[in-house]
Amino acid sequence: MKRTPLLLSLAAALLLVLTGTGSSFASGLGALASVRGAGGVNATAGCGKVPTLTSGTHTIQSGGQNRTYILRVPAGYDNNHPYRLVFGFHWRGGTANDVDSGGTDGYNWSYYGLRRLADNANNSTIFVAPQGNGNGWANPGGQDVAFVDAMVNQIESGLCVDTTQLFSAGFSYGGAMSYALACSRATVFRAVAVYSGANLSGCNGGTQPIAYMGLHGGRDNVLPIASGRQLRDTFVRNNGCTPQNPPEPAYGSLTHIITTYSGCRSGYPVVWAAFDGAGHDPGPIDGSTGDGWRTWTSAAVWQFFTQFDSGTPPTPQPTDNQEIVGQQSGRCLDINNSTTANGTQAQLWDCNGGANQRWTHTTGKQLVVYGNKCLGVGQGAGNGAPAAIWDCNGQADQQWNINPDGTITAAQSGLCLDASGQGTGNGTKVQLWSCSGGANQHWRLQS
Image (cartoon, rainbow, N blue to C red; front, side, top):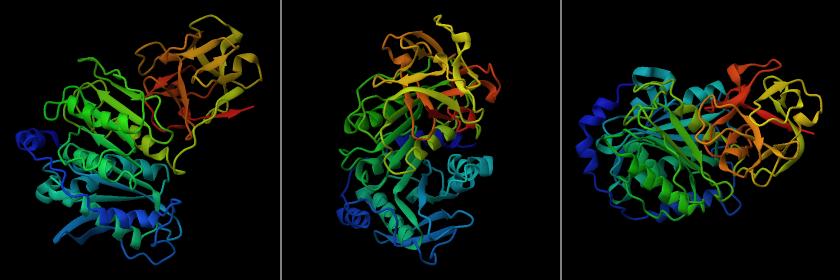
């Protein structure tokens, strides 16, 4: 991905961009809100009709200007199926074509890698890459937000879209634009992902909750990580999350830490992903200072967006005395030989109904076995940390989220409960690992 040199050369100009909020364009927002209705109607006017839009570059009038965007309609488009709609905003000096094509990494990095994951998961998604004026998103007078309003109206009129499934992702200036949409269009977009952003496109409104994910590098010398924290904290407040200073990887660790905030309003999570290694970059790779499409960020953002497949996900209820079964293996989360010794790592084993395979997910988010031992990973745990039993102590490293998509994530780091090496056999150890969407990270509960 050859983006960073260009961005570095334009750093000074980027930092001087004005952040005026401009007008609210209430009429545009009102039109969009009326489509949804008080009950949150899912299907748009384009459903059940011959599509009036196809993949390719489109021109639209907005604010007296001719604006363009690239549209990607899924193969085998079904006009009776409401589709997810994802906007991908380019960085300063970038273009809509860079986002759509994936640049030097091609298809694998198209829409920050999300298009590939959508195709792999057979998840129906329409992608949009808007083109910024002057290859940026200064949003003077709110003109770029109005441009988004016009695109949403045109796409929803011409294609079948699920109105509860609109998302925005963008890097650098594109991250700033995604943040501006989170501030002003929280009732239109379900969630945003801001890669290495800052408040460069304004924040008109900025008081309503929206699901928010921020990703930022500690070595960023274009838009320092403090700017990303400021954006994140806007929605920590709006979403009612418990304030905290989430852990961030140390300089030289060449890794990342994902934190899901606790206490947020149901359906409005805030996730913070901090990394060390690459600088101002949306595609860092653990273990190096480089980047590429094999980055962990694509899977992390895809998981964040797709958790809302059924609209606002219900808050999982506490479970009592159930088996936790691996989707890939069909085997149970097990404590070897029914031991109760602290530090015993969990494993996969044939389900047998034993007490060493019976787990209770408490209201405190603990996974308890034997009635007094909790699954934990230790403070500051990262990839490969063993999931083991310990005396229950109520600390964050013993708290787990059982998610609607079938993953179980550590509340402290956001990493997934994982069958090591994608193993399926008896004795396969269970650990923490970056969420990848793999079947070895999906679980089901059964009595």
